[in-house]
Image (tube, rainbow, N blue to C red):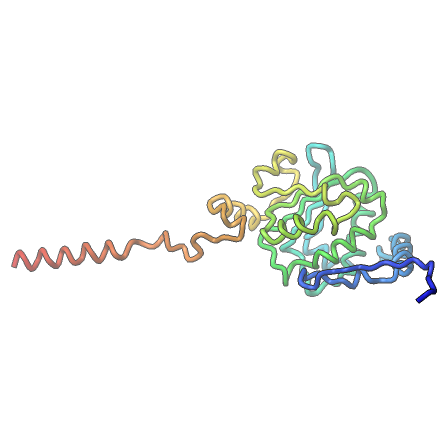
Length: 247
C-alpha cells in the first residue's frame, strides 16, 4: 500500500454498444510505430503486388479537379466488395494508388455513399480510421476536403456523436456533406467527376422523397399510385342501382 510506481500508464474506455471494434486501439504502441515505418518505406514492394482485381472495380480512382484546383480521388462505396478484401490489402492498395498517381499537390476525395450496404460495401469506420492514421503526415496535409455524397442517417449520427473524438488530425473538419448532386456542382464543375447512373437515380429518388434522407420512407409500397378502389366500387354500385330502377 505504501509503495508507488512512476511508470506511466493509460486507460482506454470504450462503450460496448457502439458497434466499434476496439482491437486497433489496444495494440502495442511500439508495434504500431514499427509497422508504420515498414510499410511507408515499401512502396516499391507494393508495386509488385497484383491489384488488377481492385483496379477493375474502379471504386477508387483519380479523376479531374475541383474549383479550388484540388485533384479528385473518387470513391464509389457501392463498388467495394468489403467481405472479400482485407483491411491490410485495402491499406496497401490505397497507399500505392496515392503514391503512384498523385505523388504531390493538394487533393480532395469525392465519396459516394449512395445505396451502400454495411455488410456488403463498408470495411468499417475503425478500418478506415486505421488506414488514415497510418498515412504519412504529408499526405494527410495534402488532403483538403472530403465531399461526402448522400450521407445516410446512420452516418450522420456516427460522425455527429463520435466524429470529433474518433477522427483526428483535423479530418473531422474536412468532411463536407452533400445531400444532393446539385450542391456538388457548387464546388466541382460538371464533367470533372464521373457520376454512376445508380448514384444519379438515387439522387432523383431523394429529390422526390426528401424524408428518405432521415431514414423515413413515406410510401414504401407506392400505395399513392394505386387507383382508389373504394371510389370505383361506389360507381359500380351506382350503375347497378340505375339499371334496377330502369327495369
